[in-house]
Length: 79
Image 1 (cartoon, rainbow, N blue to C red):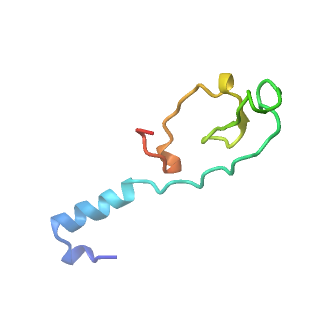
Image 2 (image 1 turned 30 degrees about the vertical axis):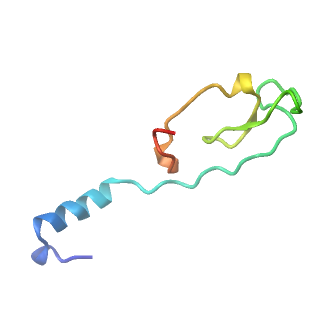
């Protein structure tokens, strides 16, 4: 850590910004399931599995249409 007596304004701004940006929390592990978490219908050739990046659970297409911003998990907000 840089001592405050020898810090330039740029150093101070960098150190302050570094403490304001949180580190991403660990992403939940993907849970491979044979059925959708919501409707409990089985996955197969016509019902594909989608993993939720927020909770890691498996969902079918009709139950995976929600989108969330997850910067706290390290995902780019634009994805």
